[in-house]
Amino acid sequence: MKVNIYNQEGNIVGETDLPFYTEKFSVDLVHQVAVAMQARKRQGSAHTKNRGEVRGGGRKPWRQKGTGRARHGSTRSPIWRGGGVAFGPRKERNYYQKINQKMKKAAWYEVLSQKARDKEIYIFEKLSLEKTRDADKLLKKLGLKSVLVAGINPRAFRNIPRLKTARDVVFLDLLNYKYLLVDKSWIT
Image (cartoon, rainbow, N blue to C red; front, side, top):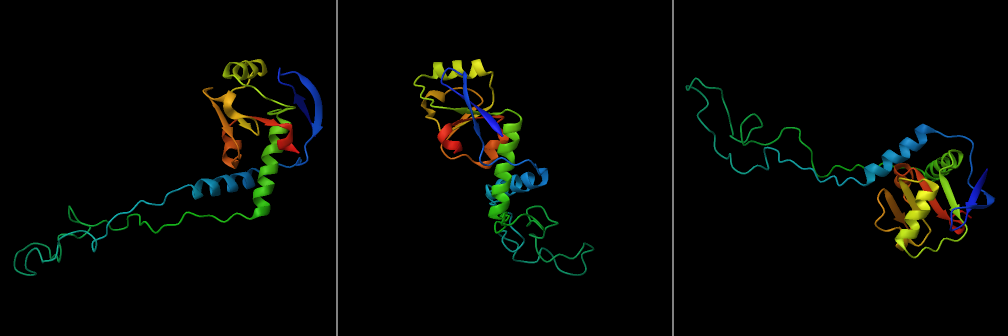
Protein backbone atom coordinates (compact mmCIF):
# COMPACT_ATOMS: atom_id res chain seq x y z
CA MET A 1 0.00 0.00 0.00
CA LYS A 2 1.21 3.49 -0.85
CA VAL A 3 1.59 6.06 1.91
CA ASN A 4 2.36 9.75 1.39
CA ILE A 5 5.68 11.22 2.45
CA TYR A 6 5.61 14.76 3.83
CA ASN A 7 8.29 17.43 4.14
CA GLN A 8 8.92 19.72 7.09
CA GLU A 9 6.30 22.22 5.94
CA GLY A 10 3.58 19.55 5.78
CA ASN A 11 3.44 19.24 1.98
CA ILE A 12 3.34 15.90 0.15
CA VAL A 13 6.66 15.20 -1.62
CA GLY A 14 6.29 11.54 -2.59
CA GLU A 15 4.97 8.07 -1.82
CA THR A 16 6.41 4.91 -0.32
CA ASP A 17 5.34 1.31 0.12
CA LEU A 18 4.80 -0.10 3.59
CA PRO A 19 6.87 -3.28 4.03
CA PHE A 20 4.58 -4.62 6.77
CA TYR A 21 1.20 -4.08 5.09
CA THR A 22 -1.45 -6.80 5.57
CA GLU A 23 -4.99 -6.87 4.20
CA LYS A 24 -6.65 -8.62 7.12
CA PHE A 25 -7.47 -7.14 10.51
CA SER A 26 -8.27 -9.48 13.38
CA VAL A 27 -9.99 -7.63 16.20
CA ASP A 28 -9.67 -10.70 18.43
CA LEU A 29 -5.91 -10.93 17.97
CA VAL A 30 -5.35 -7.22 18.62
CA HIS A 31 -7.57 -7.42 21.70
CA GLN A 32 -5.74 -10.47 23.05
CA VAL A 33 -2.34 -8.82 22.66
CA ALA A 34 -3.58 -5.54 24.20
CA VAL A 35 -5.09 -7.32 27.22
CA ALA A 36 -1.87 -9.31 27.71
CA MET A 37 0.20 -6.12 27.60
CA GLN A 38 -2.08 -4.43 30.13
CA ALA A 39 -1.98 -7.50 32.37
CA ARG A 40 1.83 -7.43 32.38
CA LYS A 41 1.74 -3.87 33.69
CA ARG A 42 -0.33 -4.85 36.73
CA GLN A 43 1.45 -4.79 40.06
CA GLY A 44 -0.37 -7.67 41.67
CA SER A 45 0.35 -6.30 45.13
CA ALA A 46 -3.21 -6.38 46.54
CA HIS A 47 -3.06 -8.39 49.75
CA THR A 48 -5.43 -9.10 52.63
CA LYS A 49 -4.70 -10.93 55.87
CA ASN A 50 -6.51 -14.17 56.58
CA ARG A 51 -7.48 -15.27 60.07
CA GLY A 52 -4.04 -16.75 60.73
CA GLU A 53 -2.22 -13.51 59.89
CA VAL A 54 -4.41 -11.05 61.82
CA ARG A 55 -2.96 -10.01 65.18
CA GLY A 56 -4.67 -11.28 68.32
CA GLY A 57 -7.49 -13.76 68.88
CA GLY A 58 -5.41 -16.37 70.68
CA ARG A 59 -7.85 -17.22 73.43
CA LYS A 60 -11.41 -18.48 73.19
CA PRO A 61 -13.78 -15.51 73.67
CA TRP A 62 -16.17 -17.43 76.00
CA ARG A 63 -16.69 -20.99 77.05
CA GLN A 64 -18.19 -23.50 74.65
CA LYS A 65 -21.40 -24.39 76.52
CA GLY A 66 -23.80 -22.86 78.95
CA THR A 67 -23.78 -19.20 77.92
CA GLY A 68 -26.66 -19.31 75.43
CA ARG A 69 -24.49 -17.72 72.82
CA ALA A 70 -23.06 -19.26 69.66
CA ARG A 71 -19.78 -21.14 70.02
CA HIS A 72 -16.63 -19.30 68.87
CA GLY A 73 -12.98 -20.19 69.00
CA SER A 74 -11.38 -16.85 68.04
CA THR A 75 -12.22 -13.18 67.76
CA ARG A 76 -10.27 -13.08 64.49
CA SER A 77 -12.70 -15.25 62.56
CA PRO A 78 -13.87 -13.71 59.24
CA ILE A 79 -17.38 -13.20 60.63
CA TRP A 80 -16.09 -11.00 63.44
CA ARG A 81 -15.28 -7.32 63.25
CA GLY A 82 -11.50 -7.00 63.22
CA GLY A 83 -11.16 -10.53 61.93
CA GLY A 84 -9.35 -11.84 58.87
CA VAL A 85 -10.68 -11.74 55.31
CA ALA A 86 -12.09 -15.02 54.04
CA PHE A 87 -11.35 -15.01 50.29
CA GLY A 88 -9.47 -11.76 49.74
CA PRO A 89 -6.67 -11.11 47.24
CA ARG A 90 -3.23 -12.57 47.97
CA LYS A 91 0.00 -10.94 46.83
CA GLU A 92 1.30 -14.04 45.10
CA ARG A 93 -1.17 -13.59 42.23
CA ASN A 94 0.51 -13.52 38.81
CA TYR A 95 -1.30 -11.71 35.97
CA TYR A 96 1.17 -12.67 33.23
CA GLN A 97 -0.38 -13.89 29.96
CA LYS A 98 1.78 -15.58 27.36
CA ILE A 99 1.65 -14.20 23.83
CA ASN A 100 3.59 -15.89 21.04
CA GLN A 101 6.08 -13.76 19.10
CA LYS A 102 4.27 -14.43 15.82
CA MET A 103 0.97 -13.30 17.31
CA LYS A 104 2.53 -10.13 18.70
CA LYS A 105 4.20 -9.33 15.38
CA ALA A 106 0.99 -10.00 13.45
CA ALA A 107 -0.96 -7.70 15.79
CA TRP A 108 1.62 -4.92 15.27
CA TYR A 109 1.40 -5.28 11.50
CA GLU A 110 -2.39 -5.35 11.53
CA VAL A 111 -2.68 -2.19 13.64
CA LEU A 112 -0.11 -0.33 11.53
CA SER A 113 -1.82 -1.50 8.33
CA GLN A 114 -5.20 -0.35 9.63
CA LYS A 115 -3.72 3.05 10.47
CA ALA A 116 -2.32 3.24 6.94
CA ARG A 117 -5.74 2.37 5.45
CA ASP A 118 -7.37 5.07 7.60
CA LYS A 119 -4.69 7.62 6.54
CA GLU A 120 -3.48 7.97 10.14
CA ILE A 121 0.25 7.46 9.47
CA TYR A 122 2.28 10.52 8.52
CA ILE A 123 5.77 9.73 7.25
CA PHE A 124 8.25 12.61 7.09
CA GLU A 125 11.27 12.74 4.82
CA LYS A 126 13.43 14.58 7.33
CA LEU A 127 11.90 16.39 10.24
CA SER A 128 14.28 18.54 12.25
CA LEU A 129 12.21 21.05 14.16
CA GLU A 130 13.90 23.07 16.89
CA LYS A 131 11.01 25.06 18.38
CA THR A 132 7.75 23.85 19.88
CA ARG A 133 6.05 26.69 18.02
CA ASP A 134 7.08 25.15 14.68
CA ALA A 135 5.91 21.68 15.73
CA ASP A 136 2.57 23.06 16.88
CA LYS A 137 2.18 24.95 13.60
CA LEU A 138 2.89 21.76 11.63
CA LEU A 139 0.32 19.76 13.62
CA LYS A 140 -2.30 22.47 13.15
CA LYS A 141 -1.63 22.58 9.41
CA LEU A 142 -2.13 18.82 9.18
CA GLY A 143 -5.13 19.01 11.53
CA LEU A 144 -3.84 16.39 13.96
CA LYS A 145 -4.81 15.78 17.57
CA SER A 146 -3.95 12.75 19.69
CA VAL A 147 -0.56 12.13 18.10
CA LEU A 148 2.20 9.60 18.77
CA VAL A 149 5.59 10.83 17.52
CA ALA A 150 8.22 8.13 16.91
CA GLY A 151 11.70 8.23 15.47
CA ILE A 152 11.76 12.03 15.40
CA ASN A 153 13.69 14.36 17.71
CA PRO A 154 11.21 14.81 20.57
CA ARG A 155 12.54 18.15 21.76
CA ALA A 156 10.28 20.30 19.61
CA PHE A 157 7.17 18.29 20.52
CA ARG A 158 7.29 18.91 24.26
CA ASN A 159 4.44 20.73 26.02
CA ILE A 160 1.92 20.01 23.28
CA PRO A 161 -1.32 18.53 24.69
CA ARG A 162 -2.59 15.09 23.56
CA LEU A 163 0.82 14.21 22.13
CA LYS A 164 3.37 11.60 23.19
CA THR A 165 6.91 11.24 21.97
CA ALA A 166 8.48 7.81 22.08
CA ARG A 167 11.89 6.45 21.22
CA ASP A 168 10.53 2.90 21.36
CA VAL A 169 6.88 2.58 20.40
CA VAL A 170 4.77 0.41 22.68
CA PHE A 171 1.83 -1.54 21.25
CA LEU A 172 -0.65 0.08 23.64
CA ASP A 173 0.48 3.55 22.50
CA LEU A 174 -0.47 2.64 18.93
CA LEU A 175 -3.98 1.92 20.15
CA ASN A 176 -4.25 4.91 22.50
CA TYR A 177 -3.19 7.58 20.00
CA LYS A 178 -5.01 8.12 16.73
CA TYR A 179 -2.21 9.47 14.53
CA LEU A 180 1.35 8.28 14.13
CA LEU A 181 4.13 10.64 13.01
CA VAL A 182 7.31 8.84 12.00
CA ASP A 183 10.58 9.45 10.21
CA LYS A 184 11.09 7.67 6.89
CA SER A 185 13.99 5.66 8.34
CA TRP A 186 11.65 4.26 11.06
CA ILE A 187 9.38 2.61 8.47
CA THR A 188 12.06 0.97 6.31
